[in-house]
Image 1 (cartoon, rainbow over the protein chains, first blue to last red):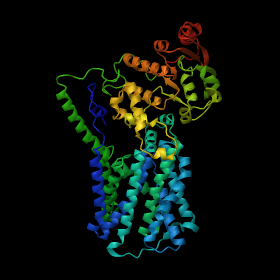
Image 2 (image 1 turned 135 degrees about the vertical axis):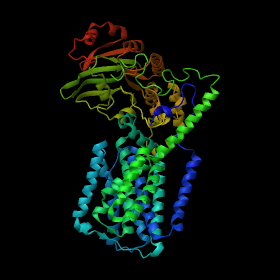
Image 3 (image 1 turned 90 degrees about the horizontal axis):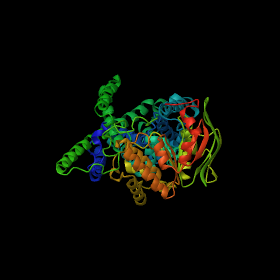
Image 4 (image 1 turned 180 degrees about the horizontal axis):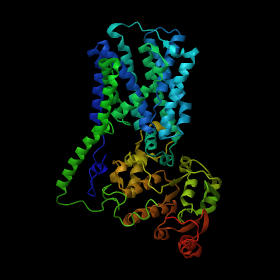
Length: 384
Length: 249
């Protein structure tokens, strides 16, 4: 991204061009999208289509959850499948051992699945969050595989590779997917609301500060460990719910699908494609990529060709919009507005140009020149 | 009257003794200058005082209260703010958000509320006004020039009204007119009772601004006093001109 382009114009008091679309547009788009998602299974009741819808909802919940930790704090976790699996096993084990009847009541277990995942995440997060960057990423992967190994080997609880089978709900035909879809949509809306709330809270600002410079944030009174841990647990909560929805929908739980490394990659990829750290990024990523992936899968079947098509698309998007779709589109849109504002300013400023040094000294034009410029004294003592 | 007192501080990195039993005290409500050749331990001393490094031994106290090895967030809560040698701001946040990060709030409910409360916003704009960045409040901080980022860092540490501010090379890479602007801001805050401790290589800047100058050499205190006296001290000259074993760039 070229900072010069989006930097405000020089000394002539610049008019500020907002970084995000105006509020009515954002709220309108959100409401419109929600209406579309509510209407979708009613318009396309075909079970093949609605089952894609359910998978999309599961990934949507997980992506929003993942983003509220990894996107906001900058700590990329490639091990959230640990919580996806915990969610699945929680629902499966409770259903089986409590002999719960299949039906609407199963959805009551979703918050339980989330809570168990969140509780499990606290000691894990406490250990992992002491390291950063690549070390953190590698450790998250390791933790996920530890859980997979446990699921394979604690046979008395998990039945190992034999897996667990859940009772099937008695809903039939076109209606079967509907409850899963709408409950999933509801959970996604709750996750989205929490993500939105964190983003605008004082707490969330601390999280973003940590993403930008953790040590600096500490020196300004931010309790970094606590802040990171809360976000980590909140994200585990929603990923656990996604798992809790997946298990009864598919009707079985196996270690390799519960603690699934490709789930981790999928979540990270779709949030990156949509726009990491943004509110709409994970939503867009999930709504575009998951149906596409499912469609490719159904089209090309077991030949795994769908993975190639998926990969090509991923490369294409990252080539064209390296920051993801949402940041890419908004910054292009903003560049246009800035250019227009400049043109206006030049027109207006043809007569009286802005006074030199209207702002603080040394700060006329932001980043028109780099730190190492011709300013007297620069280059000698700086960054010694 | 001293505000920060360090006693026999020791800190080593491998074989390098960055602080070798450093004892000094900084005067309250004064502008203290901390000078010394490269590698004399100034930044390490800052890091130990502000909790970014733990001392091997020794004591740091703030107005008689022991704050040795307190964590950086605690040190900030005690009213000590600092800047870094290489300016550190939050580049992806807006200028206004940067300042808000430093606004302290306690308790879960307060944390859950929107970051942009009216009272804090007023204070934030006041702080930005003070350094002359108010008109850039909604811009992304990473887009600011180097000098503006320095001012921003200076602005946000004043957000929580610290009683002591530690500045690590505020004049580094800064043009003369901006430097004058920074000096004015320091004096203005000092007249309101804020104590400053300034590490700086620019002697003119130090001698003009500071009431009290302390000299470090090879990890311990060499001498201290009013600027003229320190400037005339032959030991200081010797330290700078290379009697010491270490002489950096």
